Amino acid sequence: MFKVLVTDKINDLAVKIVARVAQADNLPTMDEDELCKIIGEYDALLVRSQTKVTEKVIEAGKKLKIIGRAGVGVDNIDVNAATQKGIIVVNSPDGNTHAAAEHTIAMMMAMSRNIPAADASVKNGLWERSKFTGVEVYNKTLGIIGLGKIGSHVANVAMALGMKVVVCDPYANPEMVEKMGAKYIKHLDDFWGLCDYITIHTPKTKETTGLINVNSLNRMKKGVRIINCARGGIIDEKALCEAVKSGQVAQCAIDVYEDEKNVSNSPLLELGKSAILTPHLGASTDEAQINVALDVANQVVEVLSGGNATSAINIPALKPHKLEAVKEYMDLAQNIAEIASQMTAGAIKEISVAVGGKLSSLDISPLEIAILKGVLSANMVGINYVNAPLIAKQRGIEVKTSKTNDSENSIEVVIKTQDNSTVVKGSLIAKDIKHIVKINNYKVSIEPKKHMLLVPHINKPNMVAKVASVLGADDINISGMQVAQCSDNSNQSIMIINTDSEVKNETIEKIILIDGVDKAKYIGL
Picture (spheres, rainbow, N blue to C red):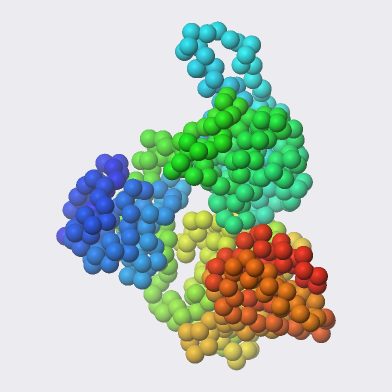
């Protein structure tokens, strides 16, 4: 009989579901050493955020087939170590959608009507009606950054309240936004000044970190109100604090913080009744906690019974006979797609995939899924082989495949937006060495690495030295480089640079200032 360990105070209903197919032991949270002593007995592990499922724990879990996280994030699980051991990692990406959306609306309303401060006043024996005069949300404009499931639900509720909704999301389909009754804004520069309220519903990525900062705050309508129930770090808290004090921002309602372990150091605490602050309560409802527990428990039962998980983070839900023929190309396909997606600006309309060599005679459907995962995960969290096709369909992204007469075993991905196309092509050398062989109009030959920098520039002396000098001054080591000239015989070239660490925006801005550099783009795989 299977044995399942359930920990971190997961709802009892999850234990009952797992008990249908296995012996379920519900134990308190344990540290690494304690968990290592017993995990070898178990076929499955269910946790929330408290238990740290480290590489050491996974190594000790000789019988583990699946690890379930009752929630969205899997930061407390070493997913790479689990993948190496063939252990499925699942989460519940949709269980808290309504809870997070409702908390956003609640924060907006509480802020608009000064409810926390008014409540405290009455409880102190005061009656200060005029002091807590609020504002109506009716006929105001709500700006939504990020129109995923949570953002979409917020939009629908806001429109039901009589609000106007504008959306800025480069990965949303403009036609679908307009169809739901909102207005699509392509560029943030055109977005800030339209909004009476702004709410954020994006993951924290290198593009969204510090998205709301001194510059963006100054472009907003004076008296704007800001809500963040997404991720800490998307807002520069110091800049927001100063904007509230100056009156540029009337109020803010914040549920997530730059440093949640040391919230007492946040400058937002200085704002008094101008800020509503809650301790990351977006998913903290009875229903959400039950939903995520039931979702993960059902996936564990399905996997132990021989089926597939619906929200696998790391193991493709693909038929083994299809995967076997192309499995060595899966990482290459995903890497090509990630590079192309990060180079692309604007809403994606279509993805074209062309394969050559022996791939042209094989079923490449697994590669299509890997490409979708790469395209979407470049800018979204929670993307896996299971949900990538569905999310692509929801966003109106069409995938077209073709086969070429090339003798080379290659994969080419073309991402098309309304304004332009991005092309990236790759191949395998000796079956296991990945190489990028084409980037737009440049023929190249370089391995895709975790940190890459693309620098298009005019083909003239000393360009490489100038770029290398900037990187060196910012303590960024170059581990590989190639310079390729544009195939259309123009005076344009491109540097593709592998680095040992991330190239931050500050460094990229310095490189762009070099005379002859067209633009620079950091790619993180």
